[in-house]
Amino acid sequence: MLYSVRMRAAEGVNGRHISGAERLVTYGEVAPIAQEMLKRAFSHTRGFADFVNITVERTPKELVRKVPLLAVDTIEVKDVNAGRTSARRALAAAGVTEQAIDSGIMQLINLPDSMRGAMLVSAETGARLDTAGTRGIRVSRMDIADQVTFARMLALHGLEANIHAREAMVLAAKVAAAGEVLAELCWSDDPEYIAGYVASRQGYIRITKLKAYGSGLGGRVFFVKSGSDIRTLTDYLEKQPVLATVLSEE
Ligand code: WAQ
Ligand code: MG
Image (cartoon, rainbow, N blue to C red; front, side, top):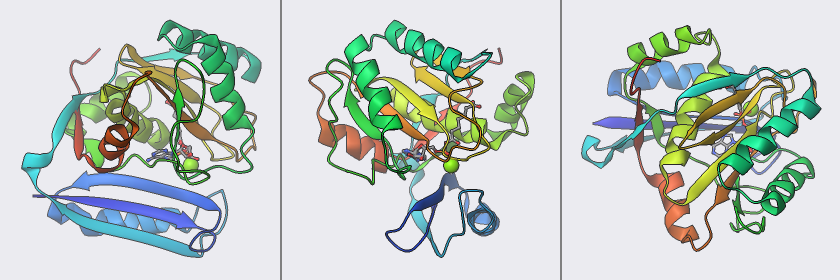
């Protein structure tokens, strides 16, 4: 039996999003992880959380789907402009149209504030496809299958102490494994974390600067193939328990 442990912190029950976290762990890890999440919720750079929700849910192992972790590559850029250009190039290479790239980036940078979830955007037209509004679709119930192998792989990239990258790689692996998603664009809503990534089945491309230092506006855009069933995709992203496996040590 595994346990899904999820945390969401906000300024008030339906207030401004502060932070969230998702893990899928054994019984013995539930209490320490819940405690760690609580500590995180109360010490976040986005602000003070006056509402914290931690959910623990039994998850039978038989329901868990294994997905491959993506190969990691880093593009060093000199500034945000260069970073966004690299992101556009990577999205285009993954098959997202220019129109959808423009639209996805505009929808992200025009948000009044960061959402707790992601936007589903057509990879062809750039139109928003989900109906989650300012809440977004939250990917949940995922973790890494083997922490030890993952730690070794992160260390090879000099990322062993980088919790942002660690969590993002797991999320990106789950998202890329959805047949409906062509590519993902992300940068953090943490004001001090300026790196982001473009992910697709071809890999996880880290880009060292995707937003200005100090900005609390981040987000995720999942570029969805045309003709996809949005209900099926949303259900997979929110509900399907997933463990990501490290395929090879690059
Ligand atoms: N499901 C869907 N969207 C999410 C989720 C989730 N579980 N968690 C966060 N988001 C969305 C939400 O709109 C947030 O505002 C936004 O993404 C940013 O979330 O390799 O830390 O957790 O160095 O702040 C990129 C790492 C880190 C790059 C991204 O995102 C690297 C990060 P954050
Ligand atoms: Mg954040």
